[in-house]
Image 1: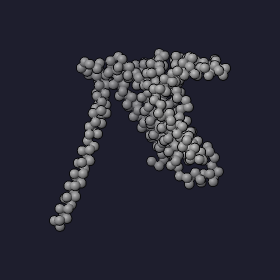
Image 2: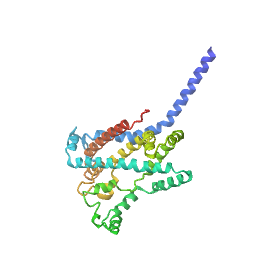
Image 3: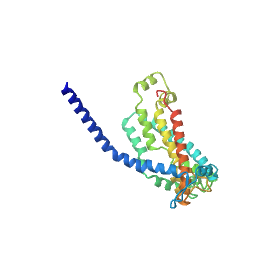
Image 4: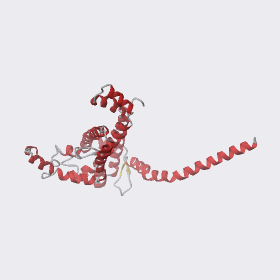
Length: 303
């Protein structure tokens, strides 16, 4: 009896040592995560209730930043622009990659599937900034788009795409034709690969056509992938800063201003860090709500 108790005590001691060893290895990661991720988030939360220029001591102003923010016409314009941006980007992040994934998945030869996947994934190695600079040239008055329109006799459609407040925002949204995001394509393709072959064979025997198969089999079984990509697209849309920063400067006027770019400009250019932190807190709440809504709406029936 004493021996069994001693063995149990030794086993518990070894397990305790292993647990402590595991925590010791993980602790540095938690320390770095807390200092570089959670602490800045706390500073932004606390700073949103202050008036701070980045140098002098912060002054507590309570909810004044938020009152000013919700009455700010520039922020209202940026929020509307971001809504249009999110709707367009979510559609482009889902529809074209899904269509191409369907086409590649139903190619009979696996070798050609690999070739087509590789061709669509190659653009991943191109830096995003390079793509933006190229499209800035395309959108110029003497750029490729207007030259092509002139070559086919559509001179009336030639336009200063980024110089007109009526078209600048839509030009940024539609940048990147044919809108086949490599990551989204691979996510959809991997989801299609998980479809049981028995289901596809049974659908073929029942005479299920392409559109019916997509509507009744593929789309319902791709809800997890759709939910993931929708959430990522919403987050990326709210964080859209590079396009207006590099291509339009938020103009003409405020036609391409986005909330995150407004945050950057009020903080870095105007030195209103407390106000910009209030903008960041509002954006965090918006992303949280939109992500929760998309997860709720797009939840698979099996969940």
